[in-house]
Amino acid sequence: MGLFVEAGELEIIAEGVRSLRIEGAFCCGIGCLFLLYGLYRALGRPGMSVMLTVISLGTRVALAYALSGLLPFGVKGIWWSVPINWALADLTDMLSV
Image (cartoon, rainbow, N blue to C red):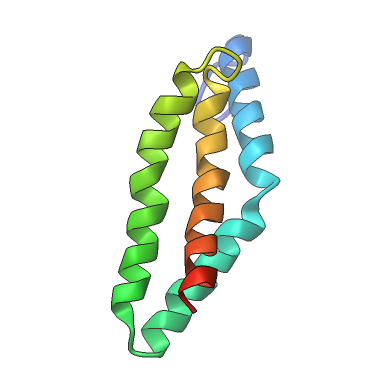
């Protein structure tokens, strides 16, 4: 975080650390998603890869907006929308097989 903000910006650093902890704990979700992207491209089904991308990115914006507006979440809702979207895309793949 020190590369992007001054050392005295403690609130910004704390929020950045929070986002990295939440998203970092679920990196296996994006790893699975990237493997699925490659798998579907290799199988000649790029449409499924595009659908997973749309689900992952498209719903992230809506979820971030919705969760950040809920009182207990606030800004944390934005960070939680990322792993939730990874899970939704992975789940979509599992259900489509």
